[in-house]
Length: 162
Image 1 (cartoon, rainbow, N blue to C red):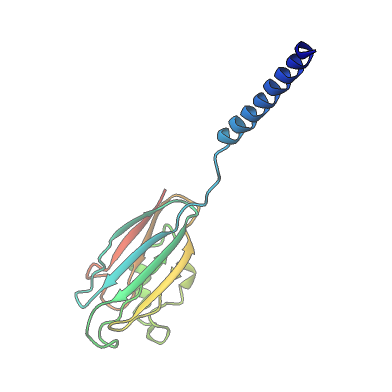
Image 2 (cartoon, rainbow, N blue to C red; image 1 turned 135 degrees about the vertical axis):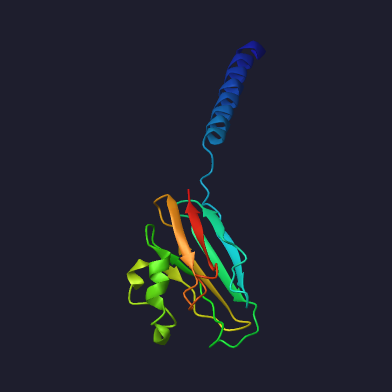
């Protein structure tokens, strides 16, 4: 009678052990889907009319956070800063040239359709933060400060989307 019970118990044990391994193998073959991390960039600008960063890289469609801090000491009317990301193919010099006459809109020109995103115009010791999705098309996207003469002094760069 013991022999009759031994065979079904062994067969049942092997069946259960095989099922457990199959589930475990299936679970390890399917990697967890995780969202890409937010690409965060801390830009500083000061009275020398320069950003601390002139090139940043992000993945297509990635969430991006840009913080701009004006570390300068001069009054806003004389030395303000912003960070404007332009659409791919936009001529940044032509854009800032059109911004010179847009003082009433914080130097955001009527050609605002060329802008993907921008910070506020900041005076000394002010900060602003923007969060946006990177473009889905790979390429180079210019960013600029549109306050008069800042682009010409080197206050510009590029965001590379890969």
